[in-house]
Image (cartoon, rainbow, N blue to C red):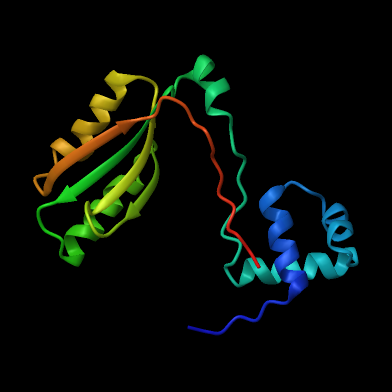
Amino acid sequence: MEQIALDTTDLQLLAQLQLNASLSNQALAAHVHISPPTCLRRVKRLRDLGLIEREIAVLSVDKLSAIVGHGLCAIVEITLDRQDEGALSAFEKRVATDDAVQQCYRVSPGPDFCLVVHTAHMPDYLALSQRLFTSDANVRNVKAFFSLKRSKFGARVPLP
């Protein structure tokens, strides 16, 4: 793997973008105390290096649930019968294509995967469970924890 060199300005740019990726280039440059052309060039470099995967809007699940559903959030532990690379990759690929699966982590020790899923209500969760877990002969155990309240949500990576 190629060694990537980041200086203080790069780290400041990444930190600011994690807080608010919708800042204009001029505003971002002002926050970091560099010129707008330098800011644009540096952010492009950070994207090209793959350090910035994508920029998204974080929606308010609580406010949206009253309008469009997705009022049920579950953290689901999955244990497979076979843990060979092919079986693990096949499960990852299947859940990655399902819109209800917000996050998927391969974990150790304990279960093989932890998923964060959002559905409108319990019947939708049951359909998801049958679609992703019951129909897969390699899924040995499913343990779901249903969220009563989201106390914190973020995707910020701590930087030096």
